[in-house]
Image 1 (cartoon, rainbow, N blue to C red):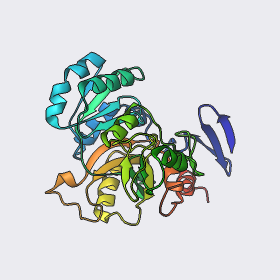
Image 2 (image 1 turned 90 degrees about the horizontal axis):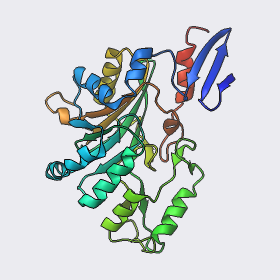
Image 3 (image 1 turned 180 degrees about the vertical axis):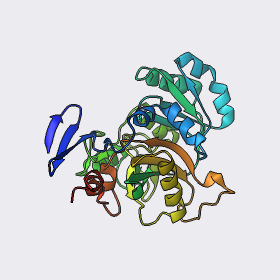
Image 4 (image 1 turned 90 degrees about the vertical axis):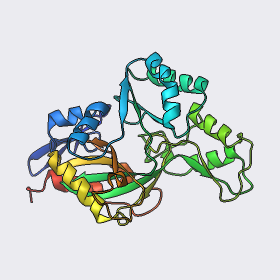
Length: 308
């Protein structure tokens, strides 16, 4: 193994004289280059998913903060909103109930400081799952639960936050296996919605959601669900990835009940949020709960499967 560029996360792996480049942990030439690039753009990725017959949330892309803010009343009537940076996979904000206009405007302007386009998407109420496909097969699945703390009846909110962030695998997002919980605009808004401050003591067993999005970079809890997912969802994801001619992919799906069989008459049972051609491996290697899946070895096997 040679490190080609440590800052760009590029490795060169060599076996029996054959070399393979790996970018950001799972980006390889196993996937078509053009499609890999296209899938980094959320609107294009969603269009491709829809063209392949899978349910996707309705959405609209905005290029200025003022345009999005002007549609505030529309999203109040819709009952909520998902905001996604169009070119950043980990910048996501969810409001299942719209906040007051002032906070919404603040959040939108902050988001546009980080990106040139924002996708506003309808809210899908279900559990969030990431399917990891390697060599055309679903090898691992994790459930993502939004950033949260659970009270013990004695500790303050601040103590609970510090305790959770002090765990061995928690740290800076995308540098540690589990991202630390933050205390930004959204998290403070969520605490206020519970009528809590940092000094409040949370009742034993009470879960406080600090966010409503469940992304790897926003402090979500990651639970392995590989053995629990009904095979009908596994088959649907594998078919989609095969139709796209991808060998490696991460597929984000909202599923209300992972045990219930997926049936064509009820497309709402699996709504597809996105697909990634260079998905993260670490959530499956270091879940907060459940069994770690050997996905790194499986990727290496796919890269060099004809060399033995």
